[in-house]
Image (cartoon, rainbow, N blue to C red):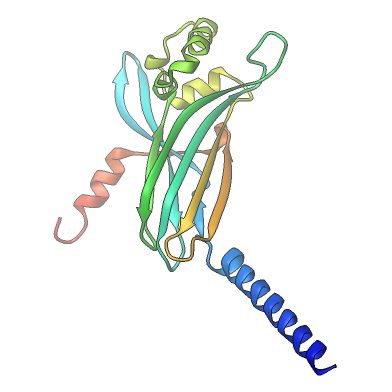
Length: 197
């Protein structure tokens, strides 16, 4: 009876320790990454009579620990792209960031010109240009999404806790109303007003 009780206690203790380790690994020691809830667009140049904007999104490491092997993917979804009404997904960004310190943030640019960087979708880029009647290289992100009603951007971020190996996955979806405009002139004036500028 004593042997059975000892074995039972040992098994129960092992299970409890495993459950505690899983909880720490899965809940407490995962990176706390955040995708900021807006696509920032900034006026960069005049193209003929139209204003041209750059577009970027931001991710932030809100953990108290560093994050490693951060994978960032951004796709453009085009509902009804094909004649049968089905969707097409254009790749825009697919990259890996080796390391992000606690509290650090990174900005990533996206835009129509990024669609042309993936050879396996050039055929569909040509079809999109035919539909729009304009080269993707001449468009910016706001004009592209305005020209393609229902289109949206999804961003996927996976990351690892730098020490425990705990893994995190987050996703964000951006539509046309999620653009936030930043005026370069206002930013320059604000910087000039800072002490020591």
